[in-house]
Image 1 (tube, rainbow, N blue to C red):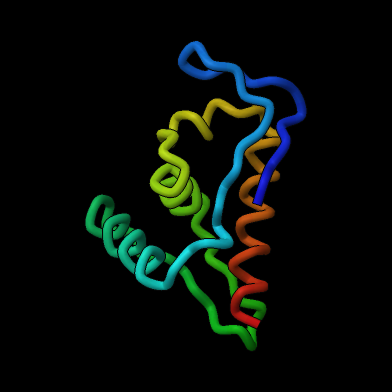
Image 2 (tube, helix red, strand yellow):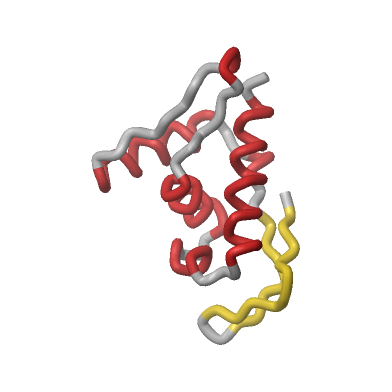
Length: 102
């Protein structure tokens, strides 16, 4: 999954026009490990509803924690994005998780 940013984004001296999230290559083990790691760091549970109730992973902090691991960009990279890009990533990744459960 590639996301084009609304305008070039500078982070730590580099300019980005978009980002490849590679969530399509996600394995169950990677997701399971990310959930365990996230939960152990902050004690938060990840809300995963079942497919019958239009399932999705709904914790925005987890989404960016997970993407930081997948993309090798720190969470701060995502937090510095313009709001349309930030919210666009949340939306697209949430939809990806929801569609994966159908």
